[in-house]
Length: 279
Image (spheres, rainbow, N blue to C red):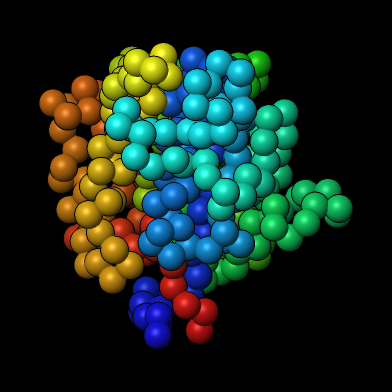
């Protein structure tokens, strides 16, 4: 039987996974997001509680020599696209407005439940974003931007009148990523990013046959670490953060925990990356 919910106030886990980039040369951002999707599914979050947003479809790009596939490693052992993938928002649907409406719950009445964030006061939410960014902004589709203030206010909105989360883990892989969580002010949010202000985030390696980089350093490091845990793991956030190093990531990965109530050495990775049974 699945483990009962821990005594930390949450009974369900949700994940919002967002690739904001389009175009073939940004293949790695799609691979980052799909690899994270595979990981949270493996650790127990059901598709019904994962919102996957992909601004482009590398699998079906005519330049893809391995049509219908996406890989985040040059050994191409694991096809991240496969036949068991549910993309909730894709292509032109992935906009700043849609992302903010998803968080606020202010989606059109016609939006199916599968494309809504149906969280409550006992939900832990993992938000992962990857793409191209700068000081306090992240590009969507190369033609619009979301600001650090936008994201901060969106999280405040989920917390306001009717609280719709217990805790949030916000994780971002982009240039100057850590500036994107600098404006957060709502309680119980833990944030981490790939690079400080004025720092680039770097790709990890390319696949010569695909012809482009297939993953970013920060996300590659995270996923490699997460591959070592399973649903019953007792590995903590502190254990993960202790592995961040400039030598490995080539940028200064950051952690912001001042809004978070629990000690990081008592906060399990599976509290956000895993699933719990409903109580």
